Image 1 (cartoon, rainbow, N blue to C red):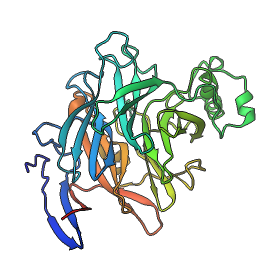
Image 2: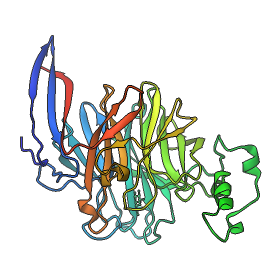
Image 3: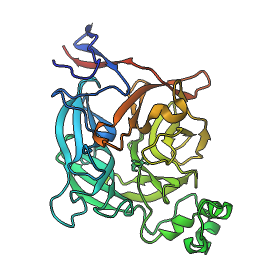
Image 4: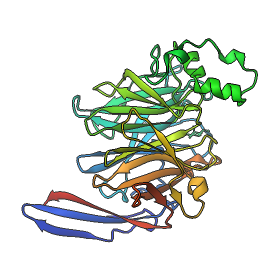
Length: 381
Ligand code: GAL
């Protein structure tokens, strides 16, 4: 096997006898901010990504970014791996369209794709942030695409705003009935404006047309229910929305989290019954301090904690921005972030670090120049 992952080393491939089954142990060295190449020797181009685990394999989906420019010229890329260190390029999972006017026409913006598997339909379901061609970031849509195989090709189901005509469950009747509108504010960021945002100024504005959906992730709970978590309300407030049984639509049940908190880039995981969410602030491509939230239920109450990052440049999330939290299935999680390089987005870097839990039960993510990720998977002898 050819390993091109910088400094990536298959340290161990131990075979431990276990009756009919053998436990295959793999160890790879992860170098955050290193040069991460695929097995063809090409730089891994999968930004704002997430990872699907399916039948013992990992599939990494992310934004294909060009060397120059900001719009999507290719689509969503897919790579596969057995050990989370050796990545084989699987091709373009969701390709842009060459049809003028198509919602995913080449030149649109596809960001932060995530894929989950739906056991009921046998389909792989991708959600991503979509901006329409030549419209900047105004569309603020979520795109949904499906495939019968993990690597694709995925076909568009639809794209659009979220939860039109439905109120968030945790917005009071009084706030729903307020008549103050965005036109009442000449200036943003004043105390009055902030209060109005908290009281759902933008939820009311977008009630009919649907709520804005930009930075996003997906989360599947232990009971099989899935959720779309997205930055809404002009990136001021996160929403968590329940998905239908086929994971392709909303049920209409959703909540707002930290209204006016200006959180984006959500990465969510559940550990010993507690839901944890790491986010960033909103400073575009520039890094900022991570935010941490927890809740006893997906429906809250969500409580904010200090940033979980530790070590050099922790106050800037080590130069990165969260994108996903990958559960390894044994109480371990990998925090994944992007180091954006707006001058050449293609070569934006990757930070993967382990999440560890302190004696107080709080998660922390500590900077390490390199670390070893060990997996053991049951396989046939
Ligand atoms: C960031 C966001 C990225 C991308 C970028 C565009 O705030 O997290 O996903 O949208 O802005 O400037």
